[in-house]
Length: 114
Length: 113
Image (cartoon, rainbow over all chains, first blue to last red; front, top):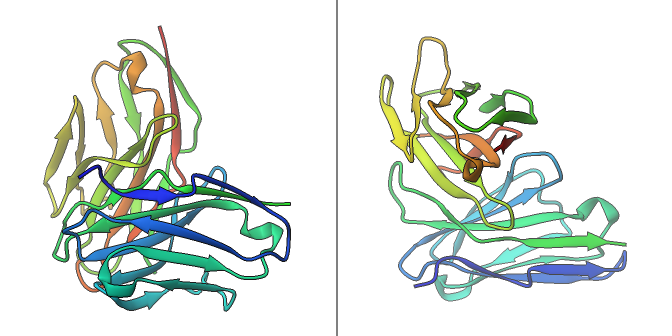
């Protein structure tokens, strides 16, 4: 297994367009997390899945954001009607369910909204 | 709510210098504490962790001790190398529920030869 992979690595889009990112977690991990990181800040939690169920969403996740994890494997994060404030690095992480287990992160998708 | 405060950067040191990066936290319950590192062009990697009070996490010459009385988890290394140049993030996760990570703002460390 090569770890958590994210696609694309970079995305430039015009304001108002929709974008979708993909995350492939480590295959045996049942928890998957999305975070957003803006320049000079630490990552902020957006949402997480246990298997295919989305169990928690942050207040940061406006109605324009939606995430899915069909069949409990890969996940997608879609942003509709993008705004310049959505420009950030979007990080995906996966882990086993259980206390104190290590989260493995992908390299992220850098979104630039122009 | 839970939060993490890190020493502001950037930090620039000479090779073989002693490193401390301060981290304090606010949390309910008994969180686990982590240091993550982000090398240039790479994803976040776990550096070390501690899951209960007085535990010491260590890896690659780095150490941090979980101090409940001072709500701190300072990162230390006795002799830094150029290859330690990276951004370091302190983080916590609650012991229950989603176990999502709450990160500090990060400290950029540059080591000069």
